[in-house]
Length: 282
Image: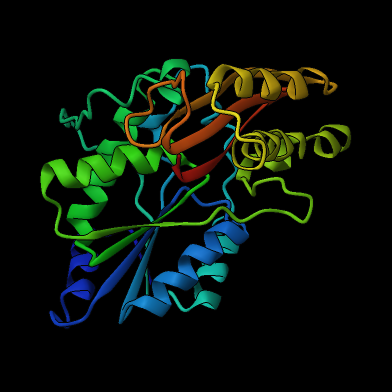
């Protein structure tokens, strides 16, 4: 496995065999089983696979936890090697954003809702760094997790709008045995908070059951059920509960079509997100 922070070396390795298909797994490190599932799929579906480890400063707001974000480089490299990754790109901020850098990639219309409403500029940083990674590696396929549902919607639109020559693959959320979505931030939870954290998935599942099993089509009624479950949980502070179009991310009044049920919750100082996607709701 080649590990480098040199863009020229990445390109040389990528194009050593122009006929080879390449999978790309962009990460910020602090890997868990969810990342490992992306890496394993990239390896299985391509001739070669590249992963990136870069804690991207432009997607963090001043109030976010950039400095506290966990950095476990050796563990991450060992994990990627065990998955069969061929190439790991480990740039620094100076490499990605050299002096004089001044370009942004903006996706209008869907980046100021949900996470974007509470984290202004976050998705501008995501689209900026992912565009650079796509251009540096030029993968055949790029792999992202469903847990960051809005991110996948934004990136799919960016790929379409800018005609990137790749397939963007969205992989299922990997969960703990009790339903909690795996996240690098879970390690910040206290024992009590960790015990309460599965309420996020439980609230989403309750919402899905209302829609699928009980036939509820009033979106506000579903949102109220999510709020009630979260508000009854010790230390949990609901940031938002959403029942929105899975395409436009607009909040719905009547449930129909492709539905994204999502929420953000703060447990103590730790901010967690989760979601479920329902398709073809009639």
